[in-house]
Image 1 (cartoon, rainbow, N blue to C red):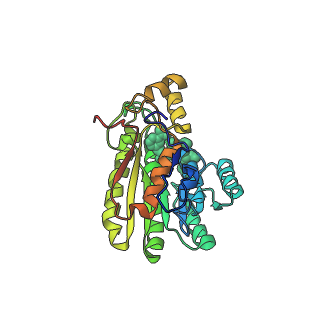
Image 2: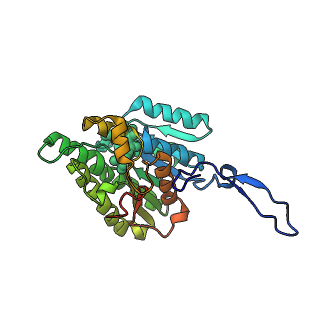
Image 3: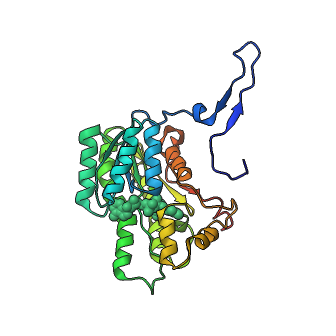
Length: 288
Ligand code: NAI
């Protein structure tokens, strides 16, 4: 394994302790606990693709009951079917996260069918690659609505449910471009910067209710969004991906690597962590 490779299943040997059972070889697959979210109910937005989809599968494997929502109905049903086949407990409720009525329908269904919500992953997002002079007013409003307003709409419904249950964890997907600017991404940077400070403000307001609020700042991650960016900029995928890989670890991220950060923030492993912006970017921002 090369330094910086993704955490594929690896082997390690346990040394024999004198007088105890003999040494065994284990893989990370069977050594890792698979119950870090046992008994938890997690609502995930943007769950039909990329980071949301991978997180839904991981959370379900870790024992959570997962409530998925996405505007892409066929893909959302497909993710739910995949989780179902693997023996997970899942609901998919289609919805547009910019609609207050849709957010309400999703949260009501979670409470009706699963009995509550302990984890909210506000993850749905879109990107427009344009400077302010290139951007239409419609695109400005759409990006701000999907990337930021959605978090307000979902969180204001879910926080009272979490508070009644004694607490919870909210995870917002921000971006490296919520901490540093990027070229021809004005509204995206504005929206993700807003997510970082929304996260901190919510952490202050809801800490007393034992609700932790954190965000993840992924660097370029290999999902449909990254390919869509290349298309918007009129660049070939290969060239765009090669440019995106220029960071200390020399590659773009995998959705699994962002999902693992979401798992950490969702689980009790992060019980004293709130108001933080967790950068997961292969070192992309290390020099800024
Ligand atoms: P993706 O395009 O694979 O997934 C985004 C999902 O959000 C899609 O399933 C889409 O249908 C859904 N969605 C879009 N608008 C919606 C709406 N109005 N209502 C409900 N669902 C909606 O992209 P990816 O990469 O998985 O993105 C997830 C999050 O990660 C986004 O917030 C994105 O900004 C963020 N991010 C992604 C990075 C990357 O390089 N892929 C880097 C930094 C942040």
